[in-house]
Amino acid sequence: MSQPPRSSAGGRHASLATRENPALRGAGFQDNCAICIRGLCQTFGEGELKKQVLFDNELDLARGEIVIMTGPSGSGKTTLLTLIGALRTVQQGSISIRGRELWGLSSSQLVDVRRNIGFIFQAHNLFTSLSALQNVRMALELKESDRAEMDRRAEEMLRAVGLGHRIHYKPQQLSGGQRQRVAIARALVHVPQIILADEPTAALDKQSGRDVVNLLKKFAKEQGTTILIVTHDNRILDVADRIVNMVDGRIISDVVVSESQAICEFLRRVPLFNGLLPDTLTKVADQMELVEYKPSEVIFRQGDAGDNFYLIRSGEAEVVFEDGGPGKVVATLDEGKFFGEMALETGEPRKATVRAKTDLTLCALDKEEYLAVKTASATFKEEISKVLFERQR
Ligand SMILES: Nc1ncnc2c1ncn2[C@@H]1O[C@H](COP(=O)(O)OP(=O)(O)OP(=O)(O)O)[C@@H](O)[C@H]1O
Ligand SMILES: [Mg+2]
Image (cartoon, rainbow, N blue to C red; front, side, top):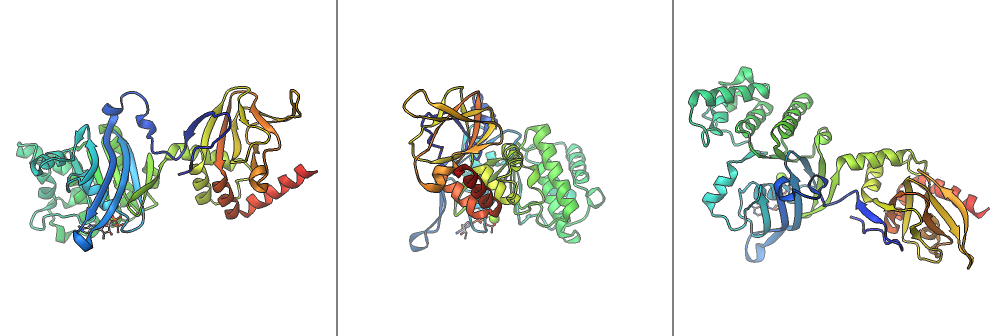
């Protein structure tokens, strides 16, 4: 994650790639937070074989939110899911599920927590001697006692996942995808508060995968269920409110999809960025910070060292040349215009002061990121050379 831009006059910063969940900003955090993780570490093995696999993780999931987690194999995604699901004891750090702390709970208390969680895991763990209906019904037996009612709900759920015609089949009479759908029906049938899914669409064809995702979305929106999905399936990314990336046991980025999409749309309209591939564009958007200024607030001063590149998202800025007197306005820049690249390119101090003329919102990219983007994009290089060339004249 990029550092907040260090502008001389401050401004109000808002990160686009943030660990602060906008669904949880302000009042009502406790009420609205379904899963709250702080300082979570996990180690496997003893002595020489001891290996830490999770490092100081933080994550907040709101009620009704769908979060997708991606990351390389072995990075710790399943381990994190099993800790949240109370399938393992928390060794260090805190996980709170709807306000209930998991650290220090006994095994029977952990079982109690699991009752409110629906699991869809890679190995679907169906009972081979039981039919699809009986497998699904088992999830209701902890809470419900009316057998006819349990059958009715189990059948309804199997129909919802497209298996109405297979309810009396046993797992070995079903295909891999169908078995996966039984597992999904079993996870959803007791209307859990939280659903944890590990590669739920991996064994499914495109349409079945889409159906499952739509069903999960319906649950999130109608029942306020919080859903955390680990997946490498980029066909289902669009369902997510947020995408979290885990690498080597650490959550390294946490992106609010709607904010990221909005900023990509905006960047795409700017010639400097429109040659970037969507992948690079998204990375640039995630690294940018929104900074707001009031009229006459200074973004940087002539003579300052250059640390950021700026793009105007809305409002107007004035470029002022300071000559010991009141200063001379040499240009006014509006939406889509950019500035601040010169000092980053040359390493020399700012050649002019830039201040807000109206209420101003800027997207700021720090020097390191700016240089990385430049390397990635031929268009970017050409554009900058052109701009620098024109400014020399
Ligand atoms: N029970 C265990 N005992 C010892 N090490 C384990 C155990 N479970 C997982 N690990 C190790 O912890 C690390 C993280 O494993 P984890 O299963 O969480 O990864 P993952 O991100 O889910 O990977 P994949 O995408 O392949 O499913 C791996 O190095 C793995 O070998
Ligand atoms: Mg895994």
